[in-house]
Structures are given as structure tokens and as C-alpha cells.
Image (cartoon, rainbow over all chains, first blue to last red; front, side, top):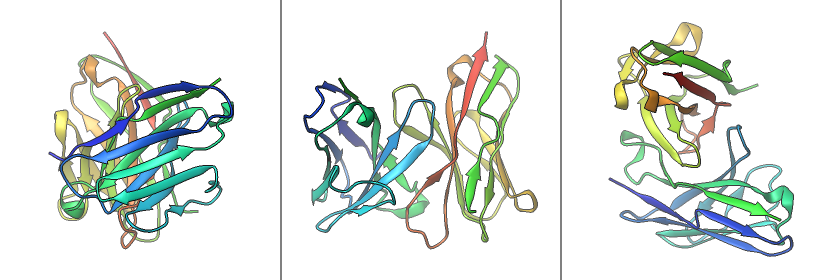
Length: 118
Length: 114
């Protein structure tokens, strides 16, 4: 079946650095990918919709200059957390839109990235 | 306001007991409905979905869910819980005409006592 790979699975870095998270669709082309943020013991909150070849669509309250999204190919979207601070520490999950639509499942999820900013 | 509600934050059941996780939605039209499971530090796995038709849907791992339009509910059930079912469960919806954009409920943490 379709698989989405997310890398890295865990990253620790110093405050002020930028961190890039990759999301790859391994066996299908994903024109649309999604980035979520999940705080401990809370639900997934959609941050942005990543569209191949165009600008990402950010949800209300998400700083687009803080969370840079690039979807340069049909199999790769990246999320860069710029000048990260401790409050950016969270679990980030990506997903890719199912190319066959709802008949299968709406999105295929990566395994998430645990980001810890010291 | 439009929302997905999971009233139970935590549920503890004994292994072998039955399980029901509640989900209610408040939208003008019936959305597409989903249940996902998340193990600690992992992504999400789809358990089952409802689009239309038979209101009782079967999913993986022995789970089923029943859509009740009159109650705006889509509760998840399992007749006999296994210790490996301990996880976080999320109800989610996609609004008709809303693309693939998922809106998640707040989640229910399931603990299984041996």
C-alpha cells in the first residue's frame, strides 16, 4: 500500500537554529500534502496544506515566515522551522493526499517528527 | 460552531471487555466520518470510514462504528478489547466539498487493564 516516510523521526537542537523536516510519498505522486502539529496529549492541528508547485496554504494563526513549506516535487514536501525556540517543541506529522481519493483513504500519514528545542 | 467532539478524554477497560468510544459532530450536512488510531510517538492509522450507505461499518482490528444521523454520532465499538488496543483514538471528519482536509476530534486515550 501507499507509504509516507517522514524524516527525521526525532531531533534535538539549540534555540535559534532552523530545522528541516522531510515528508516523502514513496510509491505515489502527492500533489497535496498536509502538515500537522500535535502537542502532548492533544489532537492534531492542521498547520498548512502543501501544494506541489505553488505556495502553501496556511491555517489561521500559523506564522508562514516561521514555518516554511516547500513542495518542489510530487514526492517531497519539507517543513522548515526557522529560528526555533522552546515553544516550537512539538510532534509534527505530515500526510499525503491519497491519489485515488476517498475510496481508499483521504490521507496517508507519516510517523511524525519529535522536535525538541533546548 | 462546527466541530468534532469526543466527550471522553480517557477510558480504561479490562482486557476482554467491550469498548465504545463516542464521537459527535456538529455540521449542517453529514460529513465523511473516520476513526484513526495513534500509538505513542507514531503517526495515524485509519481504522474505518463512513461515506454513505450501510450505517454500520466494519474496520480493521475487529473495530466497527455506527453512524446515527439523528444523534450526529459515529461511535466506535469493539466487542472484546485486547491489551494491544491501548492507544489514542481520534474521530475525524471531512466536509463534503472540503477536499481532503481532515478535522480531528480531541482524542480519547484508551488504557487496557490486564
